[in-house]
Amino acid sequence: QVQLVESGGGLVQPGGSLRLSCAASGSILSISLMGWYRQAPGKQRELVATISGGKTIYVDSVKGRFTISTDNAKDTVDLQMNSLKPEDTSVYYCHAAVWTKSGLTLHWGLGTQVTVSS
Image (tube, rainbow, N blue to C red; front, side):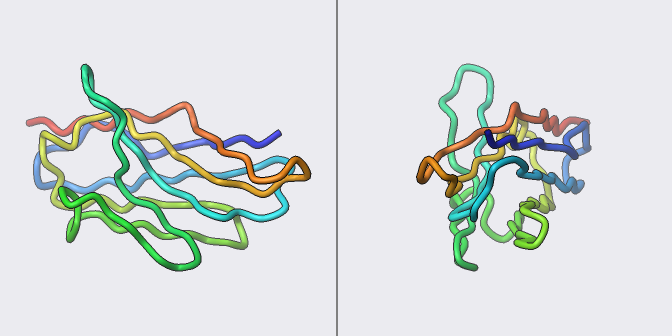
């Protein structure tokens, strides 16, 4: 059993910053990939950023504003979000591809709300 727990969401004014954190726990042998997705009301869930083996991928709309990082010793992934815009308002979900005794398994957190509004 693997759990992902997010923290750090909230309300911020346009131009502000937030830092999201996600901690993985459970029967983890190793983590192959961690990332963040988001889903706004009425829209599909979209990839925001992923990190694997030190390599990062960002959706174009957040490049230069968001930074994803991991602490492999702690099985955590953070998303530093700067210069936030109202269109960044979404529920942000942590995602991980984890090696367990059952093989490679995919996991999601419950999500954390980010609201960008004045």
